[in-house]
Length: 150
Image (tube, rainbow, N blue to C red; front, side, top):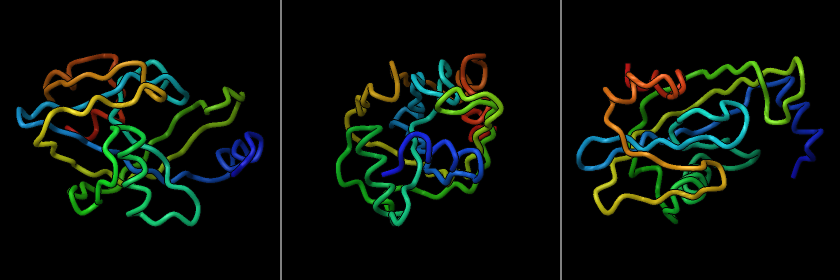
């Protein structure tokens, strides 16, 4: 496990690789969470997380789905790959001046056909189900989330 200082060096020097989950319910609504952490703190964003070193995509997908949605042992094959996206932020997790954050994001569409997941409140202070047109109209939804619906 990296120390906070080592991780800050990683953020300063390299892009991070992440998975975003574009979760939809049977009514076509999208799950978004209100971010607690930097970057993008205070905005609404789809659930997701970074891939750890030496972690397979399948293992990362399952871990992120569990951590972000509370759905254990979800297979990546249950989702549809939507493409590769880039997310650039002027800040970073540590609020260190002059250190930006760059993510390469693998986006996966994940339809949920059962009861809506509750989500976990360690990364997000709240969750919201919203239609894509409502999501695009809101000023507090991050542009990187809006990009999935444009």
